[in-house]
Length: 433
Image (cartoon, rainbow, N blue to C red):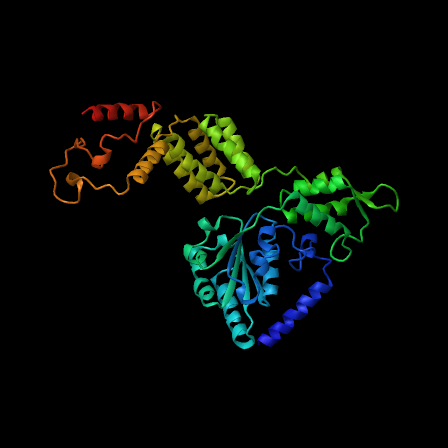
């Protein structure tokens, strides 16, 4: 059975290699080896980890990085270098049944041909806990070498048990120089690229294509391919001219400058938080829209709002945390685009709420006391044993609850903002007692 499968697969792959004309340019130009791979020098450069990963030295991996940075290509190359069968599944379409079939075939292949299988699972973050758990025993037993690809932080999206059996590898957005290399290569390659089309693409136009791709190789090559299709010669029989206007037409719309893992990502999220902190709901909504329209994960934005509700508002308005958490639940329930409504409700509430960073400073002061003083003994009168302290209806028992060495220390200093005005007055009265 496996022999027939291998023969059929080899024939299919040979046919596919023979006729790539129907494939998109990005697929045709996919690097066939590390010598063609562009970018990620910290991983595949001479002497680096993945450059040395061959044969049995190839561990299970989670490739984490933005779209178009080479995750799928790298997985294929590593499987080839390990002389393993490459089997690809997408978490968007595959289920546990597909995994079981892939694992069963891998077991047969290993037993009959002593050939390992690299199971590439694209968008692994879309698998639920049960689906991820189904991979555990097979990864641990070495039946498969798992290479998962994700655009999301694996710490949040991949089970801890599976994560502990894989090495997380961070891929970075491609630089404009990297993308320019890929564009140049595709323009001149007569076999896999556009070298037979007689294109005229000025250096500044090539730079434009690379710049507007925002670190995504697939986007750069797609733009180039469409631009080459719609370009026309300036004179009869002359080369097709790809200029800035043709590139703009190929893009259809201006790409928002926002790289989920680059400077723009941190600049925009910083502007978003500072706008809420500065009580400017208009700016806060604008920066939130910038992120969402550029493809940012709404859950990431909501996590920042939940943090903000405690860090920058806290007890000045205790409802802020409730609003942020409720909006997070609502976005998870309805998704986008409807999720922008509870998100907008939350961001405008947080921006206009009274501000206090007392939660942040309080914990920082308590943490410093722990660091400086170590494990101070618990006072006798509040240890887990019968004591003279008793419960009083409606009022706290007046006593010292801190270790003796910290008696009288004040960590929580309420601000004079919002509800904390009332809390401050209450604490002043208690502390006088």
